[in-house]
Length: 426
View 1 (cartoon, rainbow, N blue to C red):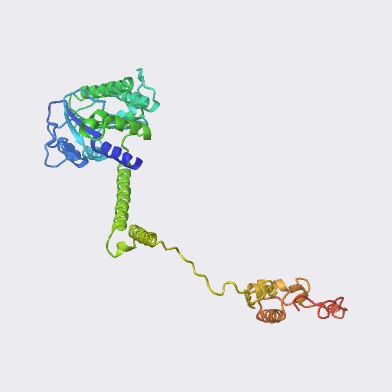
View 2: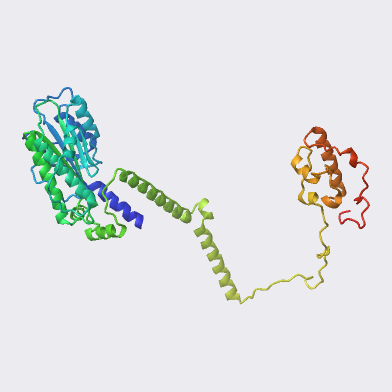
């Protein structure tokens, strides 16, 4: 249920939470032929307006393009006449920016303003060094830094000398309103509206109204969702937002997450439908299903119970005729298993190439092979051990110890072959 609710919210946000408003301040045509716009449509429109195509005239094109991106709320809007469109994709500006710079042969001014700073050409450097004295009543430090950077750029634009040239300047302003704790903080939203109006007025005045403004806003209000999606009330969506803490805007990877969730839910739904069909199938494969077997067992038991109830029969258990005879044991259960030596018990085969195993049965001081009272091997394994060690020494895998001649005539302190008491494995 939670996954379905999350996917529903993401689907509504994907479809209804993106708008694009285009304004042309010099009275020129700034209208697309459709109400829904994609990234390709917007790129083609900008290429045509700014004369980036070879067959397009450049006489009446704007001198600057100002793009304002408001992410996190749709309640912020610039009160000017313009055409509003439903934007179907993530708003990208890299293509139009690179085309403008390439067409102007790096003579255009380009600025990117967000909470990280003011980045771009000469005007961006001047704006970053421009002091401003303005009070910003915003609690979030990121949004406050964004507004401060916008005011710096506004002051720099007023003082900058924009010469008449063929190049088109590019401005991009980013407001991340989703950093607010609530979308209903009117004071903080009003601060963003003031900064937006300030930068638009400064740029329009600096370029003598030769400016194209494109305002992109994301995350629609709950009222509009309720107006367009009747089966789901605004109150229910608001509760789901608070429950799952869904207050962030659409990020670049949200579309990927949305598609992954759709794929997972589709697989789960397909698995459930397949399972139910298999349970209720009546063909040969369905006869092995759980429902079929349970139903047949229930019918058989009911039939058997009714027949016994009618006849009054009692189940009779037949016992074997020889059940009272004594049990004959084939072997003594208390007999101990025959004792075996280490090699017989573990099943290890001696190999003359395994020098590390054979070296464990050889004295490191004298080089003699340990006798049976030390190795604990049976006669057969002791014989195989002597043969394997001798073969290993001949092959060069094990060293050969030469006894010092002065110790050759020493008497034996103990004769292992003639022990006092017999060995347990003898």
